[in-house]
Length: 299
Image (cartoon, rainbow, N blue to C red; front, side, top):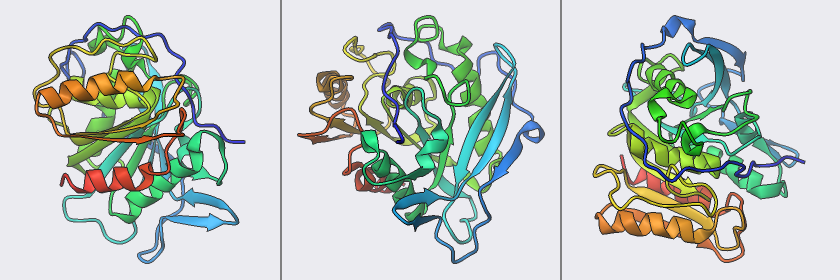
């Protein structure tokens, strides 16, 4: 049985500083190493395929050395559409995993897998088929933990957070096309649970980098579960944001999302809310087309 992770963190509701590059040297692109080749794509080969009832998507895996605040090797999985990339590279979606299960699992699932896992992989397929590259970075311990965005200390000192240093390395790798022909000027982000909070972090701490966001089963960057205070003033340049949420979510109450969305609307930020009356803390089937279409509408 394959699980999609749930939120298991304690949040701080204090705002955190932005500043993407504070005290961080760019990662040497030559130090990023491909460790797994998911299989080269022929020009006519689809990036995803069914074997029996299992949907799997081709991808490559890279190790990214991050020196600060302590030396760590982080992992990034990258899939690209079939055919030749545009001259500027593929528009790129960064999908952030939830807690405790590897981002590697995003790339393969069966119908009936718990927490909507099959719809998560189907979303990857829909994005690849629509001409987006997909990048799934791993949290520490090779995916078996959670993002720093709402962890006390890092939530209010983001410039010192290990995940901030990782994000700088990741964004450098995309911009320099170290991971392949990706377009660093056309970036999108989405994620579920802990990954949804990390998606919100992109608006808070990486201004101007992302064209649109999709926050799934989560809320503002420093919230966590029912513990949630959304600041009155959100970033003025907050990207357009899609919210997806199950109305029966007992882990992240839907009311926390609605507060975030309402404050964005009050600042005239474009939002879209999609809910499921029967949905719990899980990737929603409707997310398959909603992420694709929302990102495609913001070129």
